[in-house]
Structure formats: structure tokens, C-alpha cells
Image (tube, rainbow, N blue to C red; front, side, top):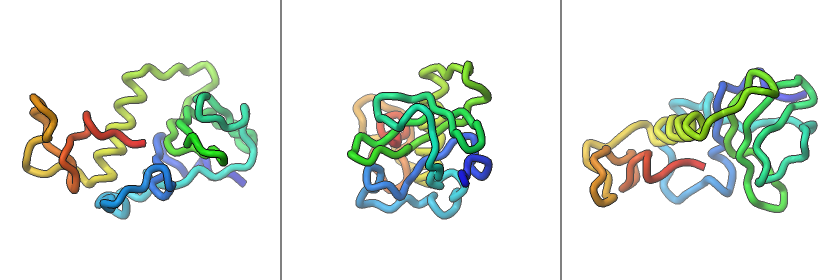
Length: 136
């Protein structure tokens, strides 16, 4: 049975080897409902890192997925879509990626991002801000 109904409108699989980094994500336990793994054996079309629009065949939920480019492709990041015709803009996708990136790091440090000319605060545990580090 799938877990689509249990997932938020956006999720990020922080346990994936593709996403894991040496610095632990400080927000992972605080905002755990956003960092669950999608779980279903039936999806159309077949998972592929070059495709993004999918449907869970167990519950009929439509998804936007970004999958790992590994042999066993799996969704690293997902956004629920209301139906098969809902189109997500690049801005929608980027906003959701930045949102879960900020949650994963549990917010910001009180110092500025190290990127030249950037006036954003850096993410906790990182030297860059959510504009310069985005997961996945």
C-alpha cells in the first residue's frame, strides 16, 4: 500500500545517499513530516530522473518528482499535484525546494551567505543561503 495520503504536499527524502551530506540536517527531526520517503510499488510512467510528472497507481495521486540519477531511480523530492493537468511553474518548484531546504537546516545563522554580493543569511550548519544551496 502506498503512503501518498500520509505525505505533505511537498516532501524531501533526506535519507537518500544522493542527498546525505557530512553535516547533519538540524531540522530533520523537528520537521520530520516533510522528510519522509515516498513508498509505492506502482507508478506511471516508470520512474526516470529525466521525467517529472507521475501518478501513483495505487491511490491515483498525481505527483511532480525529481528522482535520483542512479541505477535504482527513486523520488528524492516530490510535490503533490491536484490532477494530471496541473502544471507547476519553475517558480513553484523552486519555492518548494527552498522551503524544504530551509526546514532541513532548521533556519538560518545570524551571519550572511558567503556568496559574493549576497545579502541573505546563511543556512544553519552551512556557509551559503537557501538561494545558493537547494536540495535535492
